[in-house]
Length: 422
Length: 92
Ligand SMILES: Cc1cc2nc3c(=O)[nH]c(=O)nc-3n(C[C@H](O)[C@H](O)[C@H](O)COP(=O)(O)OP(=O)(O)OC[C@H]3O[C@@H](n4cnc5c(N)ncnc54)[C@H](O)[C@@H]3O)c2cc1C
Ligand SMILES: [Zn+2]
Image (cartoon, rainbow over the protein chains, first blue to last red):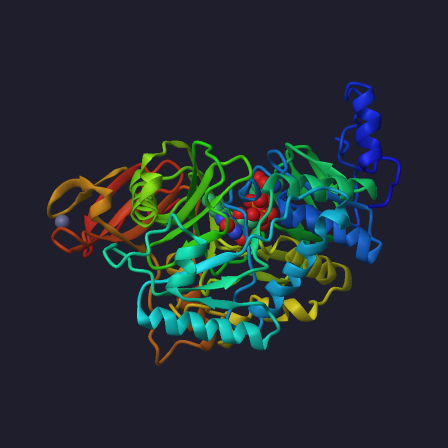
């Protein structure tokens, strides 16, 4: 963070406590758009705001605006189940998510904003022998890449996650699990707000309620864009709009290897601490953790058909809850407090896209499927590099749009070009 | 949950059906298609926000695959047709 004046610290807390907390300043300004910027980022989620921050911090580019059609963090950044991990199998993904993990570990300090990153561990469960083999293979690949991974047998899981039904009478018997101890959760809103505040301190304009409705291109070069607050000139545009990537790319007639799908999540009423780590089960479509407020945060699979509805369908909720109460019978007594959905940009290989596009000055960050929250700082870091240097950072060279045509897809699960299956 | 009209079984809950995908994607002749045309067919989708022509299968019913025109924002279904029928006017 640049300006020391507004720094948060124990002293600022004490000072404001004495003044009945009436002296806190706004965390970022709400400026009118200028007529021209060096770089414009479309989308005020974690990825867009983070990109603006790293453009300023790493590349000294501060004449930047972030345009958000709603309010910042109101997209998937504010809707996800906040799991942060780097337990990937394939080269490319593995190094990229670990870069992101390293940035997470220092993010609160770097931003001078508590993103509540909590390395409570993420445990992936195996329910069969083949799944044990697959998880051990993944664990070995991670360790070869210098990433932490431990295989836990059923006995250890029984001791560490006591509420999980590890008996042999359960519908989904537990054969073991892969634990990444450095993985965990973070406060999603704080990530958007922390990046926004830090970017603003460099003079970057964050403009809310400003929807981009057109991208102006002349002779294959970007020269500006049209928004609901008027036209703005710029030579570089970074698109980071998650589920609406195809809509933005339609404006310049570029077709995407993406389908938009709905992913839902839900929380229970808050209860006392009872679940320390994040527990996930790919086979039963469940991931569950306990928030600091005490709510159980539960997510599952997609609704499985293209959707921009930003709300989900009941069968998916029912399925997730069935898995949860089968694996954690005690949770059957809780009531659900809220459910919601987010529009997901599912790619044909399940991996993201961070690259230059065939149009000069137009850069793309998208295709995050349901795993983009953990990528936020890493994605923003390499995207800022791609925009500033007009070439990819070594860690996003593998995420180009041309990988599909060239046969270099990064398909972690090996399921093929079916977006909803990743 | 929305209701889909299977051309064979009539109105049934969406849970009985499996979504397959965009029904306007056409497989080019593999002997004539360029690499680019082939990869476009495999990977690129229109993904409209609004009306979408798509294929669904009545998986837990008659197992027939058929065409549906559905709005991807409201989930309203305008029509369902057997596979052999063309959706006139395509998606907008
Ligand atoms: C239910 C759910 C659970 C998830 N769980 C996890 C998880 O546990 N771990 C994980 O790593 N990831 C998870 N994800 C995925 C993760 O949330 C996303 O991949 C990530 O937050 C994407 O960040 P973003 O900044 O790219 O997108 P967003 O936060 O969606 O930001 C994009 C912004 O662009 C704006 N926008 C769109 N169109 C325009 C336009 N024309 N003009 C201006 N602005 C526009 C939108 O309003 C939006 O605010 C989950 C997602 C959901 C929905
Ligand atoms: Zn039928």
